[in-house]
Every structure is written in structure tokens, then in C-alpha cells.
Length: 307
Image (cartoon, rainbow, N blue to C red; front, side, top):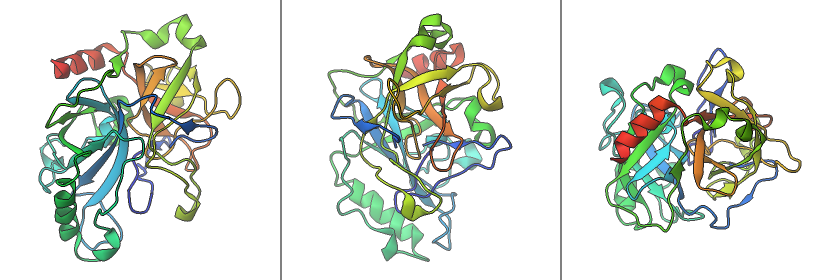
């Protein structure tokens, strides 16, 4: 689920199967403690999205993602689709190519000094966008890039091809990057017995009202167990997988709003088997869904992007 920065509100897709783009790590998750420095927070602007506080369209959101090379950040497709291009909408031309997206790989990205929405409500949304772009230009730890979603991505059914990438304007050198898994990894018997580590910057708790939301904007991790790979929540087989979010050993914690696009690693490795895709509860309880990347079309597309 992607998350708005200013009010931590949920962007919910009204889907017949009652799932929504997912999100921080909840129910037993712990600070990442720099175990996964290649995981970053995405901050982006969608010019034709609605922020109800303003009289004109345009809204900011956050997601999570993983650096899989010096210039490529892997995330969810619903975190890259429709990102603005210098403040202009891209939805009418396919939703790709927007550069109003920034990534920060700090454990707790700093927003000190960012222009606050309260100074622009209700009719200065364009000025808010322009001032924030200027602010980002002065922040060395925020890296701008260009957003692309999987060629099959459709916002009306985001969960079918829910991966995207951000191509950074400048490379970032790290000792380790996230690694793509192999074809069919999650179909093996070993995969069903393994534990997995989702990592992200989302909320640590979510309630029916915004004041019930807790945490966020800090990198957390959890330990989860694979529950189902077969047509999860009625979604066609081969796309989504369901992970537990039980608050008990050996799997503790789960995902929430703002974790969307964050990696789900095979425990103890940097091997990404899925990205956080959706949740089924507004309070981030119960199981959560990941979009598996061990499918042929996804691996072919990601490999082409990397090359």
C-alpha cells in the first residue's frame, strides 16, 4: 500500500475482491538496524491524483523499494504508474516516464525543512509541488529518477503485474544490491518451508482513523511464512502469494501502508522473491499479499531493464 506523507492516509482501490495496494511493518517487526541498506523509501507526486484538502488535483505518496543495481530500484507497479513528468500527468500516455519521484536509502529519511502542506491548503497545490521540487534539489540523500511499470500493468487490476522500477539519474555504489530470484522459486517444496523477510518504511500500526496510525518513515523488517501461492484471494494463479502476519515465533510481524514495493527476501539473504503488493485489512491485520517476481515475464522484463 502506498501512503501519503502528510496525513498517512490510505490510497484504496475499490476492488471487487476487497484488496487494496499495500503498504510499515506491524505486529512484532523490528528496526532494520541497517541490515538492508539497499532498501529505500520512495517519495513521489501524481498530478492527477486527488488530495481532498486541495481544490485542484495533485498528491504525494510514499512507497518502499530495493536497489538491484547502481541505477535500478525495484518496487511495485502501483508505486510507479502515473508519476508526474515535471509536474504534468502521464496517465493519458501510459503512466510511464515520470520523473517526479525521489528515493532515499537512509534508515530514517529526513524530511526536515520540506514545505508543509498546511501552508498551501486549499488552492496553492501547484506552488506546493514547485517548492518541494526545489527542496529536493538541495537534498543530497534524495535521489531523483524515472518511473516505469511492467508493460502489462493495469491500475484497474494492479495485482496482476504489480512491479515497477525507478531508473536513477545518478548511480549509487553499495557493497551489496538486492538479487533477483530464479524462475519458479516459490513453487518448490523448500520455499514452502522457508521463512522470509519483508522490509519497508510503512506504518507500524493502522486504525480506522488517521490519529490511530503509528510510526512510518523508518526502515523496519519482519519475519513471515509463506502461506499460499495458488490463486491467493481469488487472484489468478501465478501472480500473488500470501504471507502470514502472525505475532508469534518463528514468524513475527507483517506489512502495512507505505511498505508497498518493498522487498520480500528469502531469510538470511538478499534474494528477492516478491515485492509487497496489497493488504486485505485497513488495520494491517491478518495476512498480506506479495507480487511474486519468480515468473518468466517478470524476470525477462527486469533483466532487460538491468541491461
